[in-house]
Image (cartoon, rainbow, N blue to C red; front, top):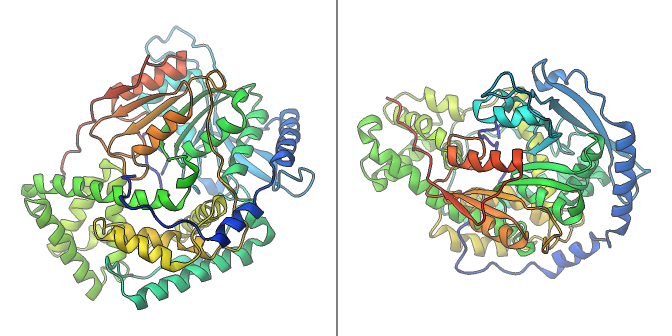
Length: 535
């Protein structure tokens, strides 16, 4: 899936189906997958060894790394894991873990002490996002009951700073100047972007060396098992958002007896045939629908923004802004691609709608500053973080599964898709194209399936119009995890629904995490209110 800084109610900054299926992966990619997959027995033994060591060592919590800018009330420690689980006595790396202990205070009754339920471990997705800030959600009203019962635990997955950070290029070279965003790129433009993708893949291999092959989702799931052991938890209570749901699904498949409770929020389709090339195609298709939702909202508030009173007129104003930015980038930094990226964020989160509409309106009326503020260049620290996140995202997805290695396959599939879904299609290609030129062995995705009684009941949450992880993924996971229950926010599209403004969704979340209660069957919640426009 496309890397994104996830913003959900957790406070972490944080796929319509194609009519025609993409081409099969090439024989070369399939051979790579086979070469990169062992029986798993050695890795299973290595995981058991690492978990035993972690349980004995525990986690010594103290001050958090200053670079992470975490408050003093939060405590951090490290967990040592093997780089290669097949060789647990070989090179090891340290994962940074954050924690805020359960408050034990009932928000509705200050005289009542809430029984503790151990640790709730969270992964915000990406891949490439850090969960170190997650424990701060205990300060949010919607999370206070959960924070009373659970130690809130976040962590930076392998490769994500400060956990053995991965880098594919000098962060100074990661900063892009203004770029075009053609929905019908020329052959010359495609060749240029393909060459850039190949160079990026080469940079990953050169900078990471032999270690590169060990950054993948199966190892992320094994790391989670070691973190569980280090926390002293007999069984894991876990919540994953976006990519975190795929990580959780792998954990459930590998370690079902170690699961206590699991929440899957905004679900990646875990079908092995979807990981990851087809999931990205589906995502691009779904974002076209979400872009239409945003344009309809802007049109409904034409009196505020003056961008047209129909979605078609709003599209014309967006295209006009792109043409102007191509001729003269705003502030020297914002071109059509930066505009598209900023508005894509609104496809993830409704909360961005007023801000992005305001910036587009102001720019077309002669004031570029709001657009520059929202889409312009990053600080040096932000750039380093973005480069690291991009490196981990690319390594994990490229290592996880076979990808087409012939650009002609990408070109054919996405040219077809862009005819009906132009908004994100080609940008998504350029994000993921390094996987066509990847130099590390590929894994073979697990076929996640659990039968009756193999796994405790789990809770799945999804928004019906989520574009980043289309709704079909939630349906797929529910069918694969026996005893799971799906709660759907109907008619909504914000990515990440847990702990947000929807009291119905939060009621199901609290009932499950606090009491283990689930609806007897799949349930629906009315959508959250649409955001109010800002004058």
